[in-house]
Image 1 (spheres, one colour):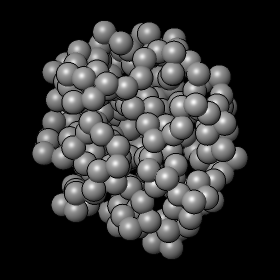
Image 2 (cartoon, rainbow, N blue to C red; image 1 turned 30 degrees about the vertical axis):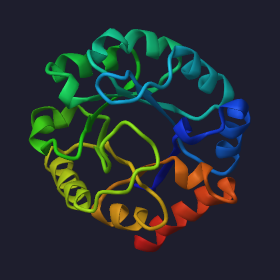
Image 3 (tube, rainbow, N blue to C red; image 1 turned 135 degrees about the vertical axis):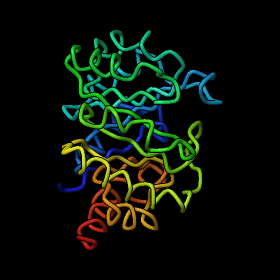
Image 4 (cartoon, rainbow, N blue to C red; image 1 turned 180 degrees about the horizontal axis):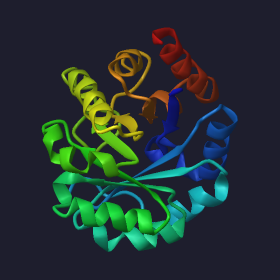
Length: 221
């Protein structure tokens, strides 16, 4: 599978959100990633439905929504209506994964599960065949701009094996500290979708940085 670059608007300039998203699309981004945090599951508070609606209106790209929230089942329908096309929930906050994944699919969205760095892959082993996306967090979630955790590369490799064993076609996404110094190793380990916030929006040429990150994956192929 060719690499997908999903700029995270957590690092965008919200005074110019529409322009920032348009720039990502013009730069060849594949998805627009939106991090929703509730201040409870993670120690930060970010976006509500209006931001999802704004992102949806600003692009034709898939809007990839990562719900870092407690009781994610309470939000699925509203975020799907707001324009999310990919909905990812955390295994740590969703004890009834089978039910919630099927609910997401019934809403017409792709269904994903995220795992924090210390959460074992066994948390998704039984539902691997249902996944449209598996997100391996390569930092502890809650804030942008954190340093990549090196041991998560091995977890990405094991996640690829898990998906292959389940005969799953799910996207294997990584999020946290992804940039020029880390994307190559994650691609080699089997990831095929890369969430990049500061690496894109903090670059001197954000539009060009998307292509630069993609090229590093191609070199590793």
